Image (cartoon, rainbow, N blue to C red; front, side):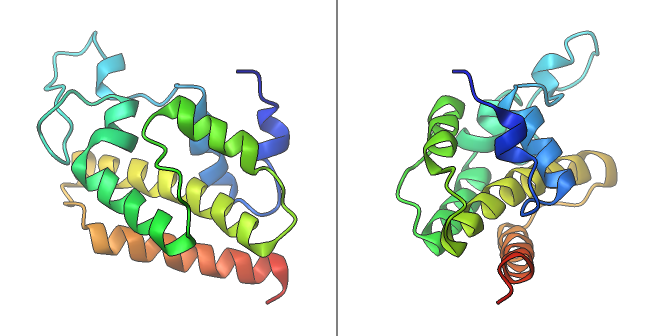
Length: 154
């Protein structure tokens, strides 16, 4: 799937650090444990401890990630489940409109969700801070609200 990511991701609505993590995720370049084969480490995903940490598991298969994505989707009225990276990328390509505040809110929320999931995983590994579904969802909603208000003048 050929997509002009620079036009889609790098814009004034999405926070740059969120856009960067979204871009790495879209290109399958996030350094998950499955890509660190040269290190002798436990490869299980830290949130659930069940499966190997892969981008697919991190963002789509883990029950905690799935719950967070479910809250955000329900909150914004997104019906697509986005259960794989290709389905999420297809939704992204279709959703690029930027014409309404609602489409901007969806984009900001998607980038923010990916960023906060990635950061929660890293905080758990490096700072021993256990993720909290409600706390992560609150961060996503708060960030989304402030960005939409700032970008739309509401």
